[in-house]
Amino acid sequence: MIHRAQALADRIEQGADALAAFARTLSPAEWTTPVPKDGRPIGVIVHHVANMYPLEIQLAQTLAAGNPIAGVTWDAVHQLNAQHAREHAAVEKAEALDLLQRNSRDAAAAVRTMSDEALDRAAPVSLNADAPLTAQFLIEDHALRHSWHHLAKIATARHQPALAPVIFTGKHAT
Image (cartoon, rainbow, N blue to C red; front, side):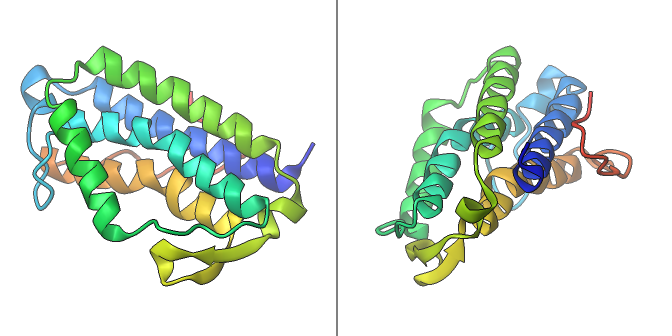
C-alpha cells in the first residue's frame, strides 16, 4: 500500500462525504439559494465540485508523469465555471449527489495508484505562473481542497457552521 497516496485519497473522500452530508440536509429552497459573493445556487456548486474531479485528477496525473500543465488560465477556469453554471442551472439534488459520490471515488482510486515518486514530481503549471508544482500539491490544492472550500461557502449561505470539526483518522467519513 502507498501510505501517502492512501492518505490523500482518504481526504478526498472525506471532503466529498462532508459536502454530501451537508447537501442532503438542504431543503429544495436552500438547494437553489445563491451563494454570496459567488452567485451560483448551492446545488450548482455541489454539482460543480463533482464535475471537476476528473479534470483535477487528469491535471495531477500530468504532473505525476513529469509533464507541464500549459494553457490553463484563470480566465479559462472562470469561463468553464460559467458554462457549467448555465448548463446545470436546474440540477436535481439526487443527480448532483450521485455524481459527487462516483467522481470523488474515482478520483480517490486514481490517487491511490500514485507512488511517492509520482506525487513528488514537479513541472510548470500555467495556472500558477508556471511555478514548478508537485502532483501532490495539485491534488491537495484542487481535488482535495475543492469540496471543503465550497462546503464552507455553502454553509455561510445557509448561515450555520458546515459541520462539527473533522478529525482525520485516515478513513473517510461515513
